[in-house]
Image (tube, rainbow, N blue to C red; front, top):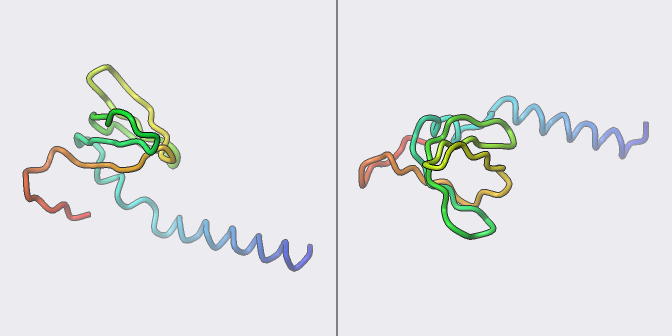
Length: 90
C-alpha cells in the first residue's frame, strides 16, 4: 500500500469516526413535528409532518400522502409547530 493510499484510508476512517461520535443532531429533534422543506431546485415548499429519516432521506407525511425527500436536495427546513417567538433548543 502506498503512502497516498494509506493517507486516504486514514482520512476516511477519521471522517467515519467523527460522524459516529456526533451523529445527526438537528433532524432527530424534528421527528413528529410539522415542518416546511424548501428544495435547492426551487419550486413550491413542501409542508408535512416528519415521519422518519435515514442518512440519505427524510420521510414526510403530507396532505397528499407520504413523500420521500433526498437530503442532498434540501435547501432549508423550518419548524412550523412552534409558537411565534419560540426558540428551539437545537
